[in-house]
Image 1: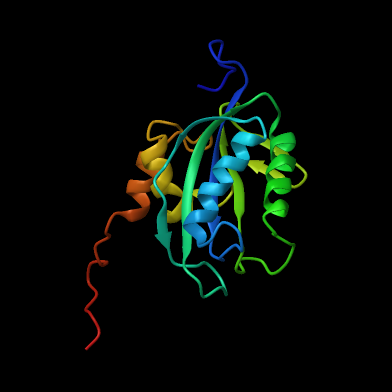
Image 2: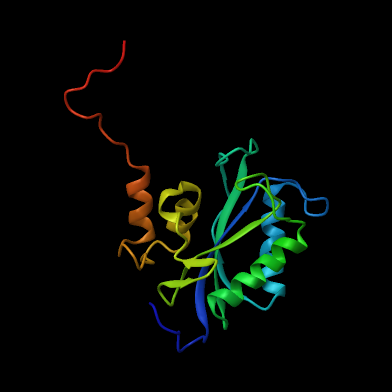
Length: 177
């Protein structure tokens, strides 16, 4: 799982996609994600599978709901090189640096890769926050349910189940009146 695939060559990556702003050419956020998949393909990345698109509440100050998904792809480049390519695609869709967690036309993040862990200036794979984000783990649990987080050893399906399971109230506490 964490080595180059001898059959297809290159590294396998899971990339999360998100949008919560309409694009003048691609339309609403769901259309933006479809166009982003086409842009990834046109950039020479080999798309293997894509998750269904889900709607999610915003994180942070943005008020617009997001369209989120994920794609499993194969690339012959290192994580920093792929990140540079993803940032170029975001820019071509009109993304500009700005407020953290603000509204954005397109957000592309490397979540996992078949090489395990990568740490460098400006890039951490696996993505540091993916274990706490339902809008990332939901698509991953469908797309790559058996892929393991190299840090915790848990599968994407297990991480999603842990994050979404209901928790009982602590013993000895009464609900407020």
